Length: 341
Ligand code: P6P
Image (cartoon, rainbow, N blue to C red; front, side, top):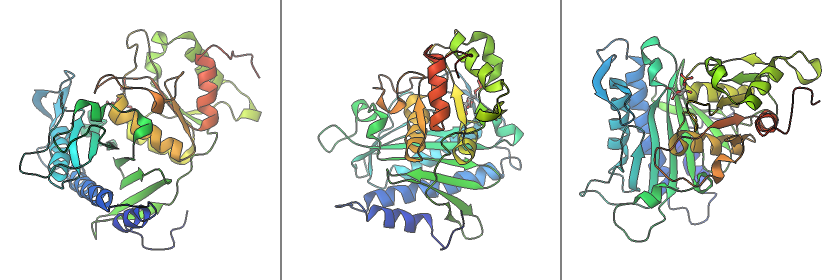
């Protein structure tokens, strides 16, 4: 989509916020702080091969997974960029078990941010695209003090901002405030995110499916049938689909958002809730995909309608083009079989 004007992220945020009556500009400042953090992380990711930032810290994160230095760098950078602007009352990160409070010397704000600082980090050492995912809510609890767990455990439908950054061949920041989805590519020569994807809309039907087929044996029958359905030859429905799986959620999601298709991380008999996290992976990407005209569910329930119970809870994820997610749900729910036309 040709871009007619030099639209920076900051200008877009301000112009976008002006559309909301009573907008305080606070959201603009919050998103600008986020953009700064993304630029700093991008710098480190892009030179990760050159400095001793690769390899393991020797620490483990709260899920018992080895933590890469870049994970913690991104985690710390986001907190440092966001904890003093006076916009947030609490944060939560994949890398931290509990709530991240605002330091006592800083003003406490009315927003909540949950984030995955560096998703796909197992790909860092092999130069595969990785990313940051963020989700912003208004605080729910009364009072001016530190935010609480209740402020974090809100349904995805309550989000006011969602976005992600892909650190790949270029660094792209994609966000929505409920008024469409917009992508900005970082121009490192000026250090600005420039509008490159105006009002992204995902194709209603794609030809790409993304899932880790190594888990096939552990899947439920309905899903096995769906994958077989995608691999059948049928000109009318553009089958067989193409399999594309990078193993980095933001990279797989971004490709399918632009080209169309479906990404799945389903449950299996070893992981009854799948692998991906509701609050800072599935909810923000689901808000984005719906704003782009797509669909996201756990195979049965709309992701944005799920009432969270725990900060780090996992949910199965089917996300992408409307048509593809609907067909997948019909197979998973047993409403459709391989013979169904
Ligand atoms: P698997 C990366 O570790 C991640 O959390 C997501 O970015 C990615 O989609 C998924 O896990 C890949 O998991 O089990 O297919 O390697």
